[in-house]
Image 1: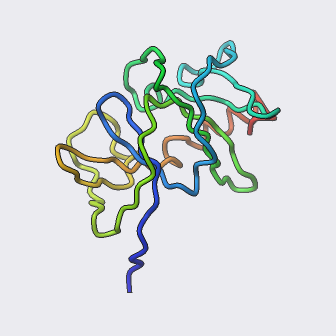
Image 2 (image 1 turned 180 degrees about the vertical axis):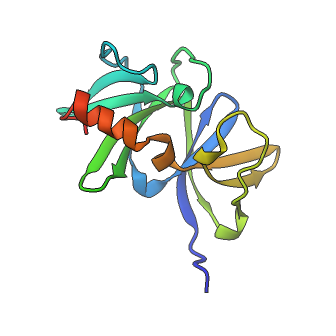
Length: 161
């Protein structure tokens, strides 16, 4: 018998598109503040911020998804994520355009077909929820933040990984 438990997810916007990540991976949502820039880092690593004494590496999710950079606004947020790795938990911040809500999606609402004709890589897509006028894309955060990203963090900023 299939699990019918609704999936709790934090929904957010990047441009006009809506995305969601499962609540268990989200530690907190912060107002955007300019990160401390790190020289020679890949473009999607925008720097570090201090969160209660812990250095958190910040990734611009727009850039990581291959979208154009956008100037921060008053609605720009940092989604602080806790991503399980093999032997530890990676804490990383994702710059998003706007936090929307916490939503529950029933498993039968989620279309697992990633072929929806959108401009980003479909291997980042865990599922799609249809809504009036569009979609909410459930992103596979483990594929967006790759093992290479985690290794780079551990190498460059051991306190952040």
